[in-house]
Image (cartoon, rainbow, N blue to C red; front, side, top):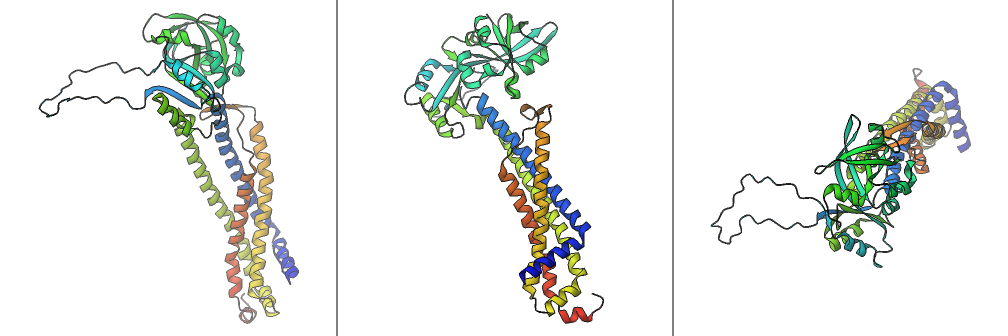
Length: 422
């Protein structure tokens, strides 16, 4: 009996070949679009995380005390005195890590040797960079280039110049690609750097780098000492310390411990990029909703074929029931038809998705994908995405087959055969 029902199911699908192929095509296209969309979305997120983990500090110790001392304005027990503030205009307190070498000695101790793999003190300064008639506000980051290279791998990102030339050149600059493009800078060009206070200084471009992270490529590296001079900081103070850790994806506990030990706020790369990661999560939710919606639409297409089949084959179904086939067996037959249409369409969609993902990944164009600048699209090849979309599509198609199956179960053979209108 089972083989007979399978044969009938195939006969129903091949008997209406054009409609079956149309529905299978719809299922295949929707599956392809969904897999490609998920691959693009997750590929961008994976690429962002991989790039950030590769070029940015995993933990940043900032020059902000964890618990700043409270300001007592009244200062009297009885409350008989009052405090007033008139024209209290003060310069914003500068963020700085004092005696940073002591913090580095803690990080380099045996207790943290396995957890912290690299550390780099830095000084951040806002300046105006001038070349000819062009000027632009620039973020300068002063670093010890060897220590910074262990974290950001800037030496591997250089498109012009080298680190040795940077170290031996007075007032040298390593310029991010975005800054270089905006100001038209090339290797060995000389520019003027104007700090917030103090005289302008002549600097020389010792290298140009490209990391792919837009925020980093908007930065200019200088020596730590030069940045301290621009900011008016003594030699024992820096803006912060960047750390590379052995477990970048599980670093919250270490960051909180460093806050407790150093007394300075320690932010992880996840906290620094919380808004971007939250955006990716929202996009992922939207994509998931799209998967569900389009899957339901595909299910209705499958149900439409089977409803039409039931309507046209009512007399055949009545005969089958009259010769001994049970309602349950016929219901199973139509559910099998829904499964076959969904499965064949979903598999075809998976094959098409492989081609579309390859096509997008191979397009040789430089695109700014949110916080990243990449050559070509970042696509994810996680097989779980294929399995998930194909499984959901087949499941919805199979469930959609219950609509005509319900009609089959209600058919009375005598009534169908007696009523010639059916």
